Image 1 (tube, rainbow, N blue to C red):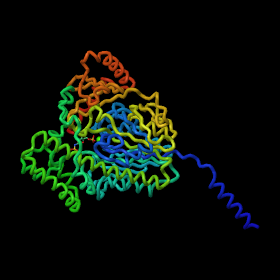
Image 2: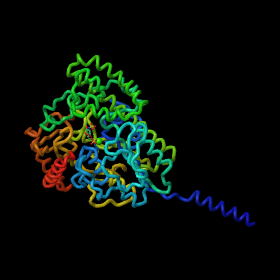
Image 3: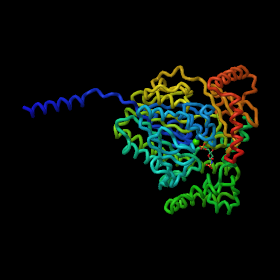
Image 4: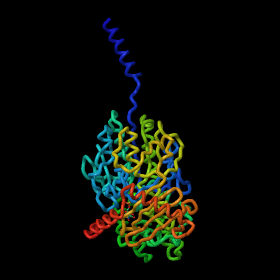
Length: 537
Ligand code: SGN
Ligand code: CA
C-alpha cells in the first residue's frame, strides 16, 4: 500500500512539473559586431561583391535595416555609444585616443544587476576592461590577426595560437557550451576584429580569394570635385595612402627591387609586425600564396600606368578584405548552429552589426570617419523569432545609440532617463511609425590618421547638412534622393535655399536636444591639444 501511494505520488509530482506552464524566461541576447564591415560586403544588402550566407540567415529569419547608421564613424567611440546609449560628447569617448571614462553606466552593468549572465569575447578597443561582465577575453587595443594576445578576466594576458576570427568564435561557443548558467538569461558580446586593416585572411581562404576579380565601384576614380575641401584633403586614397607592404602585401624585398617608396614611414614595419607573428607553418602557407601574387606583380609593375596601379590596388584590397569576411561568416554560422542545436533559438535575440561602415573603393577611398553614406551607414540585421517577422525589412534611421535602450526594454528593465537613443522594440513588432526622422552625427578625431576634418551634421531621409570646422569653416548640403553617390554639394544652389534654411533650424534643434554645443566643441578641441602636447596622439 505504501509502495502504491508512493508511486502514485511520484507520478502526480512528475506530471505536475512536466506540464506546468513554463515561465517565459527573459530573452537571451547575442550581440555580434565586426570591425569595419561595410554593408556593401554583405550579400543580404548587396550581391555584387561577395556571399555571406550565414550572416544573411539573420535577415532571412528576422529583419534587415537598410538605413541603420552611427553617430560618430570610428571604432572605440562607436563602442562607447553602444554601451552607454549616449552620444560621444556626453559619454566623453569622442575619438580613439581619449580614454573611456569607466564611471559611465553601461547597459551590460544594468543587465548583470538584473539577473543576466554576461560575457564578452573579441575586440573592445577601450584601453580599459569592460564593466558588468562575468567573463571576458578581449584583444588588447586593435589586436592581431595571427596568434593574438588576449586580456582575460581570469588569467591575465595570454597568447593564443591560431587565427583571430576562429579563436573568438571558439571562445564564444566554448562559453555557451561550458560556462553558461542555464537558470539565467544571458547577454553575450561576440566581437570580431576582422575585417579591420591590415586585412590578413585565414589560410583556408587564400585559394579562393587571392585569384578573384571584383567589380569596381563606379566612383573609383572620383576626385571629389563636386565636394568641399574636407573630402579633397582626406588621406584615404587607395593609390596614394594605402601601404604597399602593410596593406597590399607587396613583399618588402620586392618594394626595394622595384624602387617603390613606403607610402607611410611604418609601412614595412607594419608588414613585419603582422606577418611576423606567424609561426613557421603559417608563414610557409602565407609566403606561398602571397609569393605567387608578388611574382606576377613584379613582372607587371614596371609597365603599369597610374590607372592600372589603382585598379590593381583595389583588387588586392578586396581580395584580402572579403577573405577576412569569409571567416567572420563561417563563425557566425557556427554560433547560429549552436543556438539551434541547443534549443536556444526561440528565446534569443541575435544582432549582427559593425562598429561603422567602410569605403570599399568608392571615391577612390578606404577607411571611414565621414558622415557620407558608406561610412555613416552600418549593417544591421536582427532576429528574434517570437517577436520579429521573418524576412522583414526596415528603412528607419536607427542608430548604434539605440541598442542600450532596446536591450534593456527586451529584458523588461526601465532604461535610465539620460540615455539618448530610442528603443527598437516597436520597430521589431512592426509599428515604428513615430521613430526619429533625423539623425545627428559628430566626428572629432582630427588632426589624425586619414586627416578627416571635424564635422557635425544632420541626416534626414532626403538630405544631409554638414558643418566642417576646426581649421576650416565649410557647410555642405547633399540631396540624398537625386544624388545617391553624394557627388555634388548643393549648399550654394539657390534651388535648395528653403531646404537649407529648414535643415539649419532642425540641426540647431538637434544640438539642443542632444545637449551638444559650440562650448563643448571648443572644450574637446582644448582637451585634444593637451593630449597632442603630451605625445599621446
Ligand atoms: C589604425 C589604422 C587606420 C584606422 C585606425 C582606426 N591604420 O590606425 O587605418 O583608421 O586604426 O581604426 S593601421 O595601419 O594601423 O591599421 S578603428 O577601426 O580602430 O577606428
Ligand atoms: Ca572600426
